[in-house]
Amino acid sequence: MSTEYAKHETDYIKRYEKLGYTDSYRFINEKLRSTKSDKTYAAKDITIVKEHRYEGMSNPSDMSLLYVLETSDGGKGTLLTGYGPSADADLYAFLETIPEQNIKDKDILPPDAQ
Image (tube, rainbow, N blue to C red; front, top):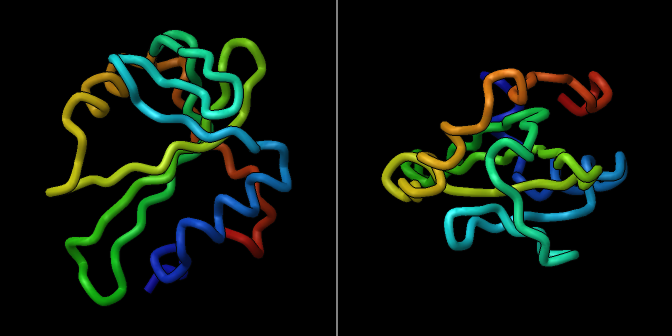
């Protein structure tokens, strides 16, 4: 069994914060909004650096995704959202419009943290 699924989302968020990904984002009015600066971003202004999927240890239907993001103006942070039955369909429609060249799969955490 992969250890990624045994780790909690906040464990990864804390690790990414140490690497400078200190902002967090919310999906509001068809855009991502920084909780730090209140700036909003269109899909073209966002790069998905990494994605982590989590399944609940006691309830497999408790599922979430952690997105590690960078913005066109140098912002770095995370977006935590549900998927499966608890998914926000509008958010996922928005994420689908992020240009393909802006979707990476970088392993930026040290190997022992993966």
